[in-house]
Length: 381
Image 1: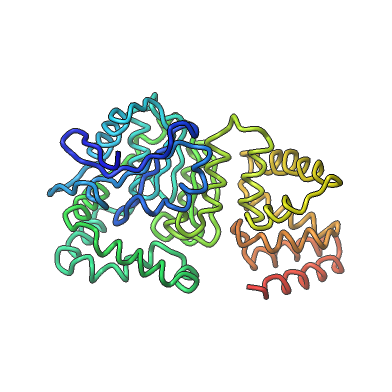
Image 2: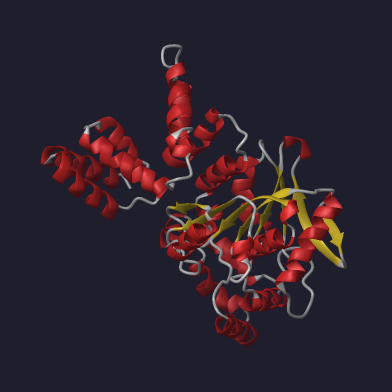
């Protein structure tokens, strides 16, 4: 059923096989549509029933004239779930989609199993900023503004590594229905859940791209602290980490949304998020009867153990791991984990500080060797 009628509005919907697992609804940002979740949805399709839809005013969903409200979006989502016969779902939303997810969870806590908020806050931007954006769109049109606005979506490296994709997303933004974009700006202008957010009850995970300037990491991390929620920084991403780093986002979603999974499955999700799918698949394929049990052991008791605990985020755990591997020293493992920094938000500046600290407490020779290993690995990029 690609289109669903709810309360006088027709929404464009994509839904995977209900038999694949618990329902997960993915909510898109302003100026986009459900396709921004393509890569993440593909990676999660075997473990979840995935429901994606274009928010009102976006994609192929209706774009009524006039200003929208957050309550409109919440009513749309509730109506969609009713039409699909779904009572309780997990929600993952980015930016505007994340605000919709927060508002829905506050209004319908009994229908929200778990909540993942990507690059969003209880209030995004300011009323004046959104009013100014609406005036610019009315005066110049989205096609003229899209090349500049898109710069806030992605990290600088994304434009260099994926110029065709960046062009495509610029086109997607430029072709957003003007009435839908303006209506969504009005919703963002007026939406402020700051006073209510402490009442949020579902288990929550907050993800944020390290280069996001619209909802910066420090503000997202502070929100996670205030809510007692988990927080993960997504390396190499800005405002749309599900597009830039789908592997990392899918790994965090899988580990958080399926707590009933075995320790092995949780560990495998985190192991892939840190070391990369290619490395883990290669290690698994090369396993023999001699070391297959060992591969399972480290997946369950390292990656499914401390690495999967909520007390520290992945980046902090990786910094600790790098320091320990430098001090011991464990050069082969250190090389592997320096290579993995591209997935965990650890920067070359962080490596320098780790190695300097280790030099004081574990000796200059091991730190000197660590610098040499890091230089060689970073030169690969």
